[in-house]
Image (cartoon, rainbow, N blue to C red; front, side, top):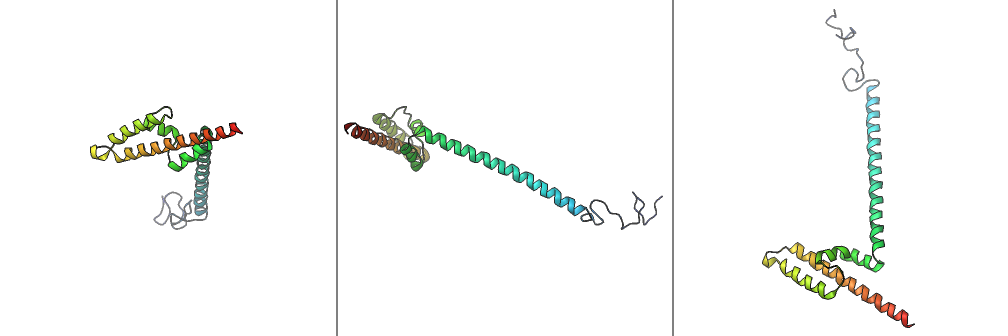
Length: 156
């Protein structure tokens, strides 16, 4: 039987118990050290996982940028960056498979009128149509310039 001033679990006098957390439940000879180690190890694990995910994301981003760069000529890739829309996306928006100026203009006129805000269309979609037309016009200009340069090289 335990007396009134003793601990119920070990019969030590009250006030002298020292467990993992010490007398006041938070500190003690080993409690703070273990708590600090747990926090440190947890932070290291989370930090390593974050860095690994960041490296993977950077590698994927570089691979995607390289793939875009290889699929387009340098001037075309630069035009995609400046206008903010790729050649393939512009072709999809205007529903054209090849760079035929008449077909591009016909589809542009139709989509621009259909998406006019005054007839219940969407300004956002109308602006996408305009950007797509600008991108395709730029690609046509680049192709014409390339053909002109090839003609000059063939003459010399």
